[in-house]
Image (tube, rainbow, N blue to C red; front, side):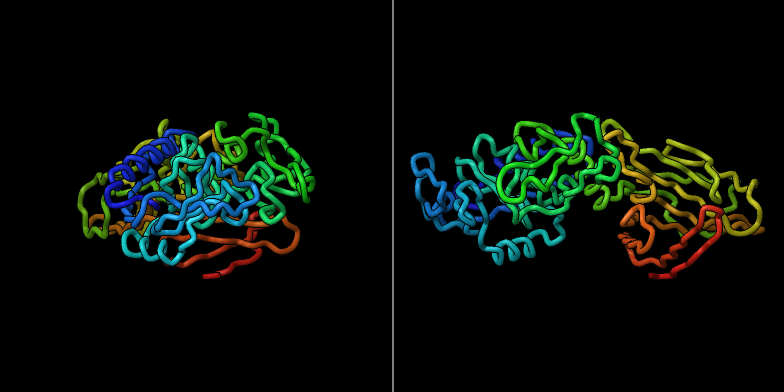
Amino acid sequence: DGYTSAEQNKFVADADTLSSYFLSIEPMKRYKGYFNVFAIRVISAQSGIKHPNNAPDCNTASVPVSNPNCYFGSTFDAFSTHRLVVAMNNTAIASVLAANFPSYDQVLIIANSNYYGGSGGQHALSTIDPASKDIAVHEVGHSFSSLADEYYAGDNYAAEKANMTAQTNPATVKWTNWMGYNGTGIIQHCCGGNSATWYKPHASCKMNVLASPFCSVCSQAFIETIHSKVNPIVSYSPPGPIANSPNQFATFKLTKVMKTVPNSLRTIWTLDGNIVAENVDSFVLDQSLLSDGTHFLNANLIDTTYLLRVNNHTNIHNSLVHWSINKNNVGIDWQSNRSKISCSVYPNPTSQTMHISLELEKNSTVLIQLISNDGKIVREVLNA
């Protein structure tokens, strides 16, 4: 916002600087291949963004009063805080996104101002102040992964989030798996209001101090958001359906996988529930070893990065290709599908009510089974 027609090349350069920095720091640098970045050129009538000089903490000596005609109405002094820069024209933002890239996952608005400021929320925003690179990453933390500030932003912003809690029991706090590692603890917020009743996991995280890296808890939140949005299996073969393949050997392959750097993805191939290969992109099936009837071959991809300490993570985020293989007296035929499943179960543990949330890549039939410790099916729910 605030880039005129003559400043569009400057905008693209600024966008490249910010996006390159975002993808150069942990944990995003490991998942760089999972991101696509698009710069949308929006022409403002006048250069710069607004500064009405009406916040109690304004300093006009460092930031001049201004009122340019900028496309999204980005302004300092939002909600009585000088450095809080917000794009006020949400209708214009929605229209530009709908016309140019309606399938976006995350928006970062770059405000053409050399002064410090930014904001998170529905859309992240950053100015091009020298500290803007870290401001942009910090604000995307709010918008992309719903992270809280790890300084106390005020009672209105206090809530249970991945990196904010009112719980103090080390055994049950949401980041209990990280306790004592890399400076992670239960650290009381300060100052003012009800800050003493809220806690954060780290004393010096990028959600508190811009120059710092993300703490382990916030890094994990970023990765889990990435997992919820991206299926790393791009393509596979054979796609199916295939009829009457007389060959004794059939090759099944993940032809393109978005691997992390360094690669932390583990591939597990199972045939009828039994592991037949691991950490390879292809599996050769000897159909002469199959009995007549239907068999199931799965290629399951899981992330084993040390940056995650999520209980039952392989059951929460699951990317797989499934082949249904039928052997008959002619040969074999099969059908296939690719799927991604994200699952959350809460509260965990529980003694009464349990909530199960599933996110599926496409419409599917879902069967949920509750199984006791002795292996008995206590309850089944179909298409819940």
